[in-house]
Length: 319
Image (tube, rainbow, N blue to C red; front, side):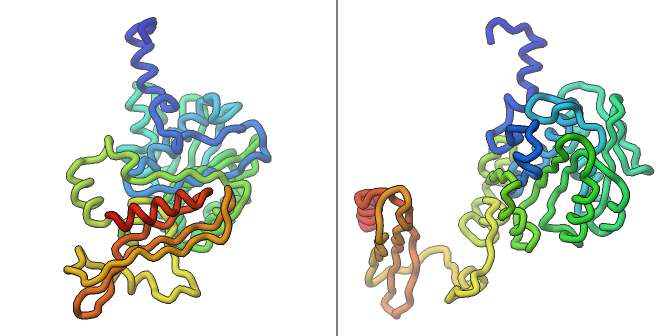
């Protein structure tokens, strides 16, 4: 670092691969067309998903190492609505135009009447809405950025039409940035071996978020079903064989348990040991004088050795 002049140091501090977290870096092996076809970026609110998508578009247009080789010339930008594409993906504070402003580069021209971005190099990105899947019939692309897929009006129809258009270049690729919801299309992508998945939580990007937001929103929803989905980026869904629905569990939450007459640590030990051992269930629960039960903690874990889950159980007892 001491050998760099000011311009070089400022350039490094604006270099996305140097700044970003591991979950925000593109998957490797871009040159291998069979390695992966889609990069699924799952994350909570404010976790940096939009910035990741915008930086990816900039990188593939430039042909930066690890992004695209050679540079990409035709891109599809697909969002929930045209307004979402414009206000979030293109003009938003973490959108495509913003990442160019941070570096002082010549940014692309946004032509709203034509619904497209035009780069000085000749690269073009067209905007599409999930409300009109048929608009993707005909155009062809080398890459695509799909934002908030779990909120799309017609997710499956829009996705399928986009796949038919990704037919240019040596290795057509797409990035999907979304807060997860249990929709069939998202489950299908998670099961696809050609899809690389990255995950981020809101807390991972805390240094770029307002402290008031973290105190009010994270403090209020952390640990709840909504918080797991919207803050931790988890795919939360119902199990058909569940004894209790998630709505019933959420409705039964309380800020704190009253004085309890008895507290127990229940242990369901795994039947095997080693790297492939089953999870050990450890749950702390109690009952008050009126006979109402309270679940206080879930300390379950996957442990390679019996001593690991035994120590966790004893620690829960002491706590």
